[in-house]
Length: 359
Image 1 (tube, rainbow, N blue to C red):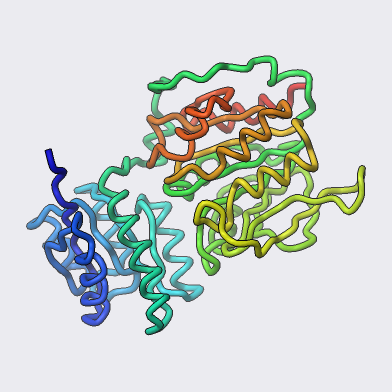
Image 2: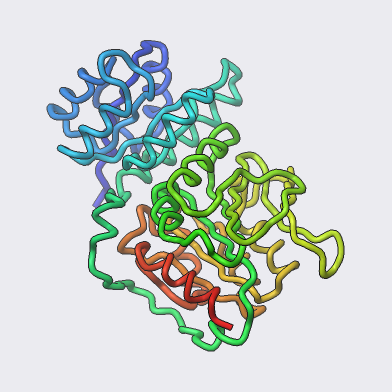
């Protein structure tokens, strides 16, 4: 049986942008644009009337802004939302807030009239709209209160011995779609005296990761910063890969302190930053003295790197399907047989504390 088209409502105060987004989405046969709205008030009325599968939502609008619409929508009529953000500092801050309120993902508006830029945005928007229809909407607060029940169709071979015998010297975390909200919950659950550094690759464009790191820093007992070339790694510090660069860990010579390196290498599996590159650099410097974590996300970035880590004795944790917004990256690692433990999101912070304190 043919799957029904994804019905989309486009919300933007610019008539030109509404037309541009409509043309982008209408070029995909699996998507039907069922209407447009010019502001937040118009959007909420049309959502009630049309019941779209997915909403694309402008950040800055008159009458009711994107955040107000999102909060009301998630409280009264939860619907998958893709935010459409501007390439500005203010746009980035509002978008990060939107991700914490439950929007599934975002795309940045085309930066100009260059056809290649518009084509790239169109391809990204179509992919994310198709994915959003099947995304699992959830609340961080509700998740934290849920009982611990792990359910998954694929049971990995649990390598309990790998949790012991090695001194865990660093935690490396990979996330994509749904990751900003998941990382907020995870990082807020870690103590300020966490004894090893943390490196994080979250798939996010160049202009947004600085705001995201500040957001994590504001809700975490740890210090969270965007990575810079030459930045030393230390306990109590978590470093987020900057958008548009691969984050690596390096030593200038054996036995010396580890620091951040940034790479301008091409995307890997169509993403930059890529968790695979980060994981492989961690293998080179730490061998198996690592805890690797793969959270919610679209695609399979992280699996190859986790495979290399596991081969050296690292301990790999994957987020359980029940709490993933998109069960893609963690599923790929589970199906590859390289995961030691599958946990719901609200149990992962405790597992990390347990792992790094085992000696």
